[in-house]
Amino acid sequence: MATHEISLTVNGEDRGLEVESGTLLVHALRDQLGYTGPNVGCESTVCGACTVRVDGDSVKSCTVLAVQADGSEVTTVSGLADGDDLHPLQESFRDEHALQCGYCTPGMLMSSLSLLEREPDPDREEIREGIEGNLCRCTGYEPIVDAVEAAAGEMRGGTDAASEEGE
Image (cartoon, rainbow, N blue to C red):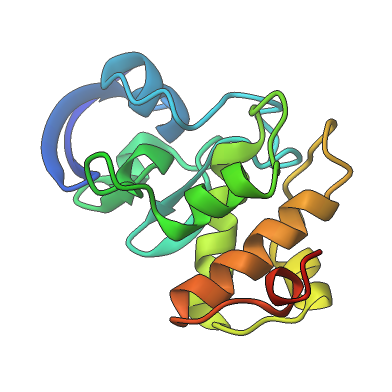
């Protein structure tokens, strides 16, 4: 199989690598560059565990060839934190117990970030629609919706109604 030299900016770091034509972005990130945040789940876009952001858009990296991302800026879940300072979404997922096994968490976080950039004050139904395509077998989704709602309030510079009511 033919190989290609590509370059990516991953979490703000310029990276060059050689990939085969059929290498999926998730495998290039994990296996060649060592970014283990995007998880390999279904490899068919069903579970969302591999979701990353490519040039600001959430994509399931199991359906993008690495060569298609050549020259792109890629953000994985580990690129959300600022050093030891967690992103408000990461803090909310921790605080609201929105993770159990954690396998879906990277994809949930990346999809939620895209949602909150499009809609800074989503209602609970909009949050559910925003995380659609990300499967979680542990939480029952309610803590995830709670976490996104809380993060939205934090990112807007306030608090969310559920926290104010003591829920």
